[in-house]
Length: 492
Image (cartoon, rainbow, N blue to C red; front, side, top):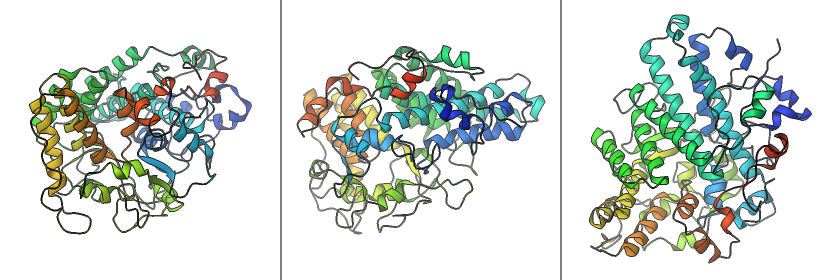
């Protein structure tokens, strides 16, 4: 039986001879378009939703086979966020391995670089899978056709709306205007028709629309499922609503959404800072995470741990020097003696290092990050006292946590920030707190860009960041495959 895949964002595969094999071959964990167009079963609907999570994973070779140059060996968010920032270097020892990552690090990349290419493909592959799932789940007869319960249908649809919003969030903050595709693409002509960039305002509106649709569909519980705690929850939806408001500078909405999340009483700061990274779905702080597991077929492990074993993902000197004295978060993030990025390994003793099928989860949203969004919103609305109070919540947990050595930080470590009515002073405190709290969690570069200080900060470190680097280039392969219908970002 011929299996035809209609790739939504990967326009290259619509046109080139080299991709015809992909259009007629089985894709692991993914429904074919032909299967999607036949009468669905509950199993095919469940599979469509579950497979859409996969594009969040750190698992190796989901979309290719050791395609380093194409940026497809693993999800590239760590390269385009942390390595591009002032926090991370590609490797502990500088070498010529994977020069495309060096180009991201020093901002000499072009539109053919594998980093943006991989990120684009991962996100649009996720969107394609979700559009198939949403198409089924919004069929008025789906319960009668499949026997799925109303509650389960609503849960899966809520998850799908959230995940589509999540992937579009990644696209819009990295590329600006992007193709906005909300249904399955049925033909080559339709693929050309959708290969146009929608204004970023429309993309943000779609993100917010999807999240508003997702919220009432999910149960009012911390976990949507006690047996599958990795699934999208209502708390995750509210958190992403707050983050979308943050990135669109809707400050009062940020405060409202974070308060809504606080009022659920589902989340709190863990007593120990590292608990988010070495426990799974039993802590107080993690709102959304990808559930890596070992020994599954197809593989579902954390492939970052393998490349860490090859020397990847080292701290910059500037990052190490940015921590205040005795801050426990520094060693929890990275051990320079053993060359272990502890956060990424989910361990303090090197466990998982070199394991290409490691079980440690990937934290995508946690409560400390959310509280700092609220601090920022208070800052931008002139409520400096509340902004400082939320910053101090994060500092208090950090100084009171048991350190990686098993003791407590000396008295006077990370004292509370004092009262201030100077916006610039409080903003600098916020910037410093986010860097220390969230290092190696794929936030720093995006923070620098949305604050408008990326050029100032990165140029001071000798990086070649220019104004056009506030967006990444549309992958050249996508532009070529669209017969130039897709237009490039300026100066690429």
